[in-house]
Length: 313
Image 1: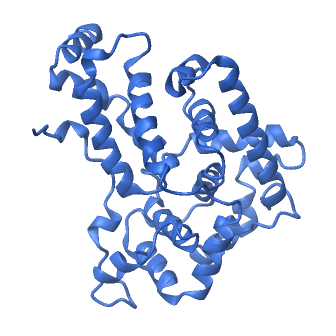
Image 2: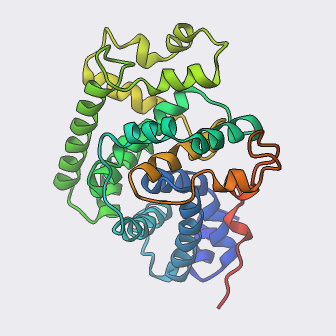
Image 3: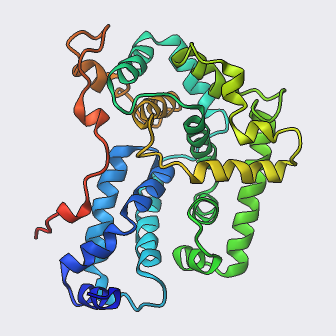
């Protein structure tokens, strides 16, 4: 069946046809939502809600945009409603997370349980740069963050972002410019990968902990961002950073489970969540000190297709 026929069937209310189309961009939608929400469980719930709402309203899809853009608009609105309940992050959020990890043995134990037991518990500096990008982007106003991520990470066109945000082209370009300027300035002053005076060394410091046998300098020089730090200007370095981030799916990466624990540590430190860090790890462990077993809910990969969802009344 041609794609246009599948779309017409979906608009007519054929859920199987809609599932087929939704599956084409489902992974990208989930990773986009994760960059906004920073919580895998929230992403799973919201992806389900997006699917239900989009299918319920499919008859109103007028094809002025692609189905993907239309669904991303629904997802963005639902994410926006979810994020209204929490404050935007401060630039030092990761520093506060590091302080919590240093001061809490249970937090460090949670990290090691995941690292030692999960198939997605490895640590790679590339992935930490991606994680850092997500953290810093959460300091932006939501509309700026959405515009930046859609354009620079997911290659949406300006006109598509206009539809998602219901803004004019001029406004979207302004949001993008402000977001890039803010992010570039933050990284220029904080990131020790591109500035020897930078205050944040987490990428390399955490690598020393989880990969002590690696030659740290050699690992750093594998990163284009580091190799280009002396020859590119700040805008070009930010573009290099986005290229790196674009190549990583935060929900499917080699260390996604470890970085989920690190993210929970940050969210706990800034007061966004409480009483959850390390609980799943410890609860599933026959010996908390050794971490023999890891709780499956905590470490489960988010690769179950939406096509398995059944609509209920």
